[in-house]
Amino acid sequence: MTFPQFTSKHDEQALFSPGDFIAYEHWVSQSFPSKMVIIYQSSPLSYFKQCYKGKFEKEKLLGMYEILKIGNIGLTKLPGIGSPHAVVLLEELIAAGANEFLSMGTAGGLSRQGIFLCCKALRDKGTSHHY
Image (cartoon, rainbow, N blue to C red; front, side):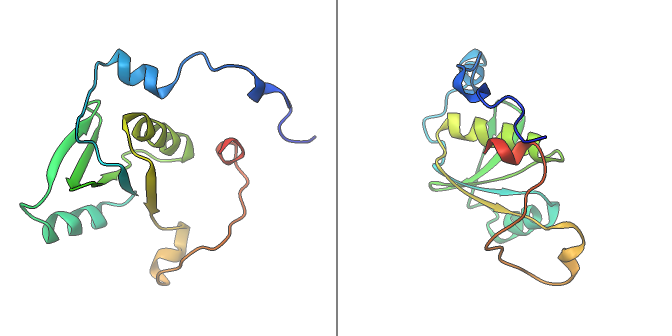
């Protein structure tokens, strides 16, 4: 069996978009950062808050995601688990105005071994095939 099973599924127009969701919620921000750092663990968030105490602004994206901003750079922590949740956040950030991203996290049990910069990866889950 090859993937995807429905080869023409991307030819169809989507029923709704993240932009439609933002418009539905009447969410507007004049100063939303165009550059975003997405983190997955609490420790980098605590470190950021400690280092930049009193120097950042807080904003809520649709009341669900806290965005910490310094100038045109924002930082947010993904509160859930898994790539489908990460994609929902990414799509909403794009619809809100962000266009550059840095994703910082750990990979399984490697976090205790040090810091690694990935230059390529093997993907074998459903979400990756769409992005």
